[in-house]
Image (cartoon, rainbow, N blue to C red):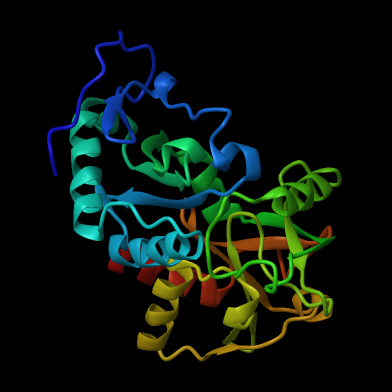
Length: 295
């Protein structure tokens, strides 16, 4: 990878550095043109990951999904996996003082087709802080979930296996949920009325010690969920995939939530009705302990 030009702008924010289309820039310089197809048509591949104990979690799995997404959007001029890994390492090093003050942090990258006349993709990579207090709160007390009337776009429009910034449906679901509980997250439906996922996490139900999550074709394949599935297999916890109705969700012994920032947590209520006694159930606690030890 050739030397990357560095902006000489005065640092104004935290973290100090981000990467944009071949150059190191200050975060307030991380902008895209109003003529960028990503802005004009929301054609944006995105991947978000985080560190645990200072190390990026499941980088290869995130990059596999990234490559699947960028291929689907025909973004063929992006760096390969090893180049991206080097870029991530340099980004963390350039921001090492900020990272050390933050503890674990998030990393987001996105790419667009760029400005049509330039025939070059836009690529950005940047860091962001994690809300550690909120994460701890969700681990210990859970989070309300509201089943919304918002329906996922059909897979005939675009595959649910790609991670993009076309997120209006997620936004509307969360706005619906927060109208009844400001701390709630909205759960989207599929065309058949079954439940799928939220804006930030995969969902699974627990009944009599066994786990059921939506079939892969209904949801974005979660990196955290895949990791927890492997943990469950080692612990001999049955995990199956199938259709989950709203009624099944409401009758569950536990409802697991799995996503990048928060890891593994649980729903303490569904549509305002408490799940069990509103605390983490035995399967969740067992998986949380194993997840903390394995990551």
